[in-house]
Length: 232
Image (cartoon, rainbow, N blue to C red; front, side, top):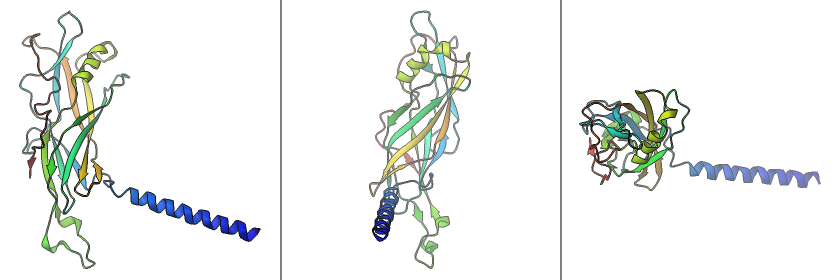
């Protein structure tokens, strides 16, 4: 009986080992905490030469219905910088996923997601970067960078904020968008970047802002992205 119990225990240990091995194989598409596919932050334009930490939205209250929230006229920026450090594999983005936090408020703003496509070429590797064991010296890999303009907030989220202004701090107040990009590699694996933050500042509308302010309130001029992105 003791021998039979020992065999059962051994069988359970072997089965557990197989499950662990299968689980480890299932994590092959992980991003190693953003080391293969990186988000570099936000930038003012597609060159990536100047950073962009946030934008301003104006809240216009005409006294009729809910206040209207519109982006500041002439606002630009909102280009997310991405880097592909995979050799011999391009990366195609699929989704920007954002969560929101308003400091000083307990209001829970719903998360949002935006579809956008940008194809980032494989990383460049130097001819002398092979190690003696046949591996790759990561320090000699030059990642390929791309900059794509993306939205940060939809009209639905802005309407939600407009409906809950009484639950928010006095103007001006900030809302921080924490965003990650999901993408598919050439091999079909799904990757997700590290999170990067973008600050949306809400202020009272200036006298030059009128109720005729219409159009896309997401602050994105390329919300129907077709995959065109500036690539370095």
